[in-house]
Image (cartoon, rainbow, N blue to C red; front, top):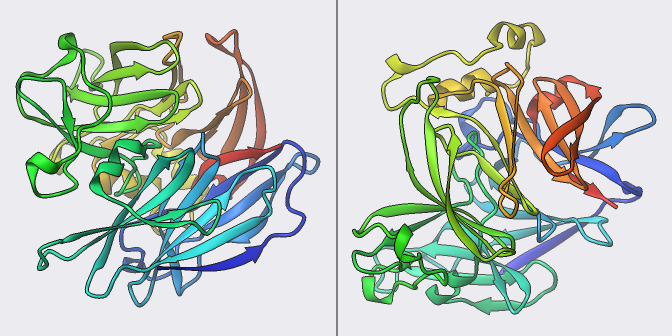
Length: 398
């Protein structure tokens, strides 16, 4: 059973309005003495200011996760209370975007909330809430809820064939990816949602002969939507540039093509916006802090004097990653690759839409045209504001 509370946000939308979300998700946000600010912000083109449309965090309810589903036009926020309850807050970005629906995820008695995934069932996005109790014979319980209406359903492991995966962000411990197991003599990818190996569903896409692994291994599906499927094949430590590489297996649903693609960086940080994959190059420096390397721009970030208790440099150290300040776009249909260097470790792509890319460098928000799908054109500084330091998501309401 799910309980719904509806909060109406009045008069916050205008034609082609840019909205941004600032937040610093953390698995247990109550590890911090104060709540980490989180809010839905509206960019005012006339005044070039950020205006708060909705506060998303209080001392009693803090942000644990945020996932942005670009094709489904929704943002799902997992909140955690002081009583260790979990809530799902859903921002719908649709024709009548005027509300924030907050849904409390309730598992059956004696079951605990573990995670959620988004499924595409009968052309409707369905949230699958996974509850577990390892002491019971049936230790998994899957609870389904439509994000568009009040439809409720009990789901099964087989519904994982319809999974939607939005991508990953380095500064979120629980990103939106799915573990799968390869098989020795086939291209099957089994989804380990139940303990019985034979009952584990087989992912609908079967790897072609040229891309099979020939052994049982754990792999990660990083992205799966109506445009493309992205599987992380492997990663290397360092290239001659001193930056790692990741090998991806991609299936493009538009061209119906399979292929391998190498990208810079050994740490997963890649998102999907239509036909574009957008990423930030990060390197995983391994388990040993002795390998830790300062990301460029630390002195610049110090001067900004961020008030965030878990700012960029603390996140880099906590997750043990190195960010050289490289952003990239890759079109899975045309295979066009666009890369640019910011020389600042705290930079990231926030949105790709209508042939424009929106990205930030420290406390500055930029907009750049994508020219002929193969290079960046004129770049425009939209705003310089300390709040931009904590912005990691953006969307446009038209």
